[in-house]
Amino acid sequence: MGCLVLHKKTVSFVALFLLLLVISSNYVLYHSSFRLQSLPGDFNGVVVGSILDLSLVAPILFLAWQRKFSLKYFIVLMATGLVAARFIIPSEYFTSFQSVMWLGVGIEGLLILFELSLLFMLVKNVPPILRRIRSSSLPLLFSFSRAVNDKFPKQTFIHILCSEMLMFYYAFGTWKKKPSDEANTFTLYKRSSFVTFQIMIIHAIVIETLGLHGLLHNTSIILSVVLLILNIYSIVFFLGDIQALRLNPLRVEDDRIYISFGLAKRMEISFKDIEKIVEDTHILEQKIPNTTIEFIARDFEKVYPDLVLTLKSPIEATLFMGIKKKYQRVAIRVDDPHAFKKIVKERLEKAQRDELS
Image (cartoon, rainbow, N blue to C red; front, side, top):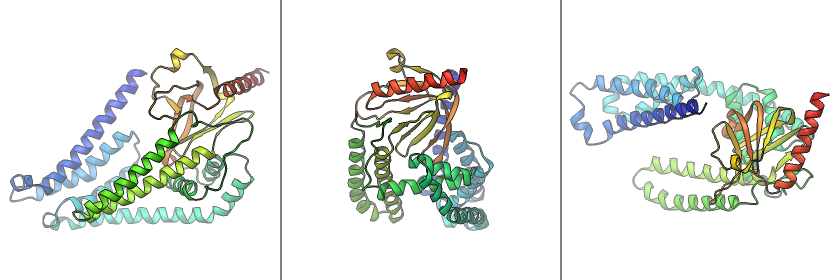
């Protein structure tokens, strides 16, 4: 198993390296002094090679890096590569291939129309989704996701959009709300400087934005605007992440655990799906493998989980942007480990007795 995980990581790393090499080499070919010596008199063959690199090779390498192979994603990436080719290849070399760019634009347009139809369906279903959320006793992160999944079980675009909606809601709409102090809830961040660390990152992004935006604006307006948008998005994400972490403590119910770590990840674990609880200090201090999801607030100090839940079979977790991934083990660190361990053991023993009876 360890060799398999290592092999997958190696393949992903090589794919990422080759992807960056393909994109950067094509950019350098047309946007540096090197192009004057490299391009022959008849440059059509070189342009065709660049178009194939960006529309076929780059998408395949991207999917290999992400280890997520899908025809829909490949078509989207291929169309994006065709459009990107127009910006990378100067117009004087691209004159004979304008139809290629418009093909990419056409595919992207059809996909946008399809996504807009899904957006219309989401807006149409907002009232019933909100009614279900209000009637649920679950934390918002879980009740909202469950309501959306029931309406749109296999629509990746909808899940991504709803993930962004949660981010903006927590970033701007929750500052008057107070963290839950219900019984059997446990915070995950107070034993660390994680929130302080997040605030430091926000300050660093603000300073970088103020400094770099003015500098880049004089050299490349497009690059400065892109970086400005990315920095604003990052600030909104960190603000929402802090609020989601504060307002959604781990909750232990009679039959399951609802655990989330800000906007980055969340998971619902039924006690009947837990095989055992690992508390051995020697095991907890070992390197955490990729098959384990962490719910641990990390800052500048090295910390270890209070316990690890080993599951009978892999269970799905929801990650950033609504991405789904299954894990075999769950590493948890809470602010009140003794009380948490006690209640988890009690509920697990009860679930095991119920299963035997």
